[in-house]
Length: 313
Image (cartoon, rainbow, N blue to C red; front, side, top):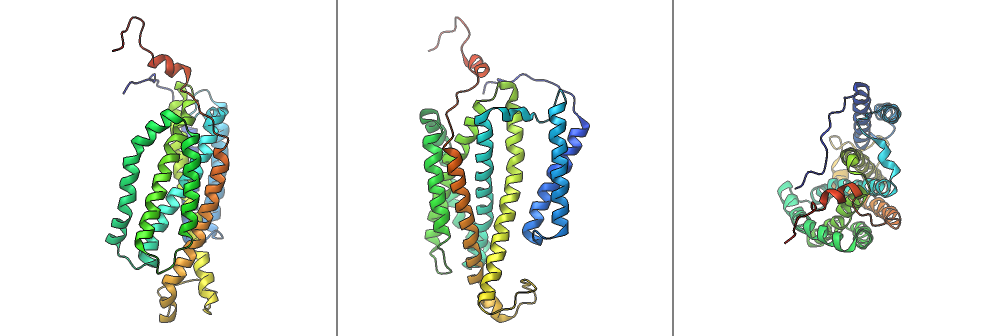
């Protein structure tokens, strides 16, 4: 692989490093705990507020110093900004679904850990195989012809997941999982590559850092929202069955009648989470309509050109 970057040694701004650590760390912890403790927890609220405040100061710092750790001026490029928003939504879909599906197979359909892992293996293998093929198709057709059909497919899969019951066939779930990861491979790489293509070569490291960082934040937010939807739906189902859920669901103290309804309540709760994911895919589809194909930056194009006098065979 040709190295198209120029090695630089900018000074590290300690204040930026501190603010980013506090900001992103607090935000990730807050959203992660929200799925466990609920959004009304003072611990969750406190860490989210601290994270947002620290990231606000971090943003101000990056825009005011000469050598920022994360150059936020990359957002001046519209296709990069659009790709980042689309990437965040897709990562929320991916990581929330990757959290929910093993739980569905085990808690809803009664599979053990090994069985759940094996049932999810075909989709993962398919995704790995399709990656290089999608790269070639992106070079040939551009992003829109892959991203838009991929998001339509993701939305359809999410809404089909919302129709599952405790009697749903595992073959049906495996087929949906394979389709989901196939559609995801049509979206993620083209969206990320198209956005990065608009950046000048000197901003590539900053663009990559922004994508990687927001991937973690989006995953935490998506997982927390999915767990909230799951827990809320599960409690509503048990209330409809006549159980007193005023103190929440405590499995250690649950009686046999509640335990007998747990698989059905879990499947009911997870339906709401998948409906939410389907709505998110519709939002992503709307965003993708504004996507335009971007060729690599002029600096990269020059670096990729053969030197004068070079003969291509």
